[in-house]
Amino acid sequence: MNVGLLEAKPAWFELLLSPNGWLERDILFPANVNGNHWVAVEVNLKELALKVYDSYPDANSVDEILRWATCLRKMLSSLLVHTIPDTYNDPTSFAVERPEEGIPHQGNESDCGIFTLKFLEYIWARKQFDIEAEDGTPLRVKIVTEIFQNSKQVPSVNDAN
Image (cartoon, rainbow, N blue to C red):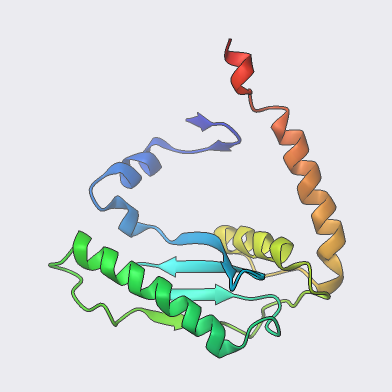
């Protein structure tokens, strides 16, 4: 099945739309911490683990990141308790981790968004991180180019008329 820019197999949709099918997948998303910094978040619902990938650890202390992640942990725990109470009934069991080893650091204060996007891409593809501090500007140009080129392929609302 072709869904715009990506191709997905019908089994993926069946799993996602089945009752509690979303529990079988990891969740990846960008998150803004304290209104000034982007990080990549990976949630593993099977292992009850939440990882926060941070390319600029000086922006927020470990304590600030963990305090922020605790709110997310509580929300996810509550969701699981209400969705599958027979299986999941301990709202404190979600582990929060901020990996440091092997995490590339950005070279300035403004590339956290670009690094966050690349982290999500690498995590999704299950690849080792292969970016360095000086890659920020070239990556920014590459991502903007890809967005612009792909936007020409997506029909606009006006094209339907």
